[in-house]
Image: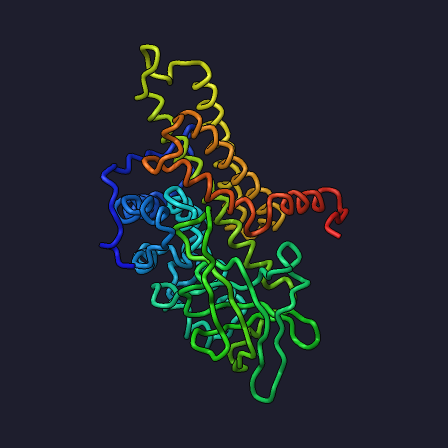
Length: 401
């Protein structure tokens, strides 16, 4: 679907970022420049059409090249491979600005950068890096990530998708589901077990015989994002498409940590958009002769929102510093992802109440954020699984099995 097929909203995007504790003082000029350029692009190219995309349940594919141009694909990947060579705070800021508009748009960028480009960069060889990364960075290629299966979500180590060596190639069989970008992806980074039961990373290319990507329809969430399956029926995989520098569950989990970091920042963007919308509405909506912002219960909601947003902002900023220093643990990332999404979904629901009936309409973004966050609270590790990751980290006792 081309850009001119989407109905553009007549409402101007008036978003102003809340910064109650002056966190901008902690950012570099480069960070702020990146944020402003991404925000400007989002306001001019995405905000006007996103409600129509969600109503039609269509991903705006024409935005892919723009996402590449603003550096949203693999911003931390070195410039040599087509990335922007930025730090992790810059990466978080980009994800926050995208999800401020829509979680589905941020998901597309997260998958491309954290789940496709990152494993090729971290676990691939020079030939694979040079073949795929520059085109993924520009959006000339789009990728997806295959880990979750119909019967194995929170327990990925029990996956059934498998590869078997057959002469000078591997044969891949199995299926993955709930895969963002899959319906139109050019490549898929897929995790499968070899004959020894060891998990390996495989690059699967569209057009390989036996590889199909049926789309998932009927979603109430992430409606402006394309979701589908990956089905492998005796797909012949060249030996050169195996990621050589990783074996075991550590591979896909390290990718998820990259994505979860982005979500920890991104979900706060959704929260800030809901807060900003509710605050503006409360100042303009008059009942009983005065703006509803003058009533105690509305002030309570708004004051609690900005408090929780501020706490989450400080957490992810500190996490970004630790990530830049290579000191952020997977457990810390899990805590931040869980906290940010819980904060966002609570704020979205409170904001919806402030807007009353208007909150459920497409005239405002809040109900769309609520529906999207119902997916974000589950994917890249469910809300409960992240709690158990913290529990394991602080007690040393494994509660998973």
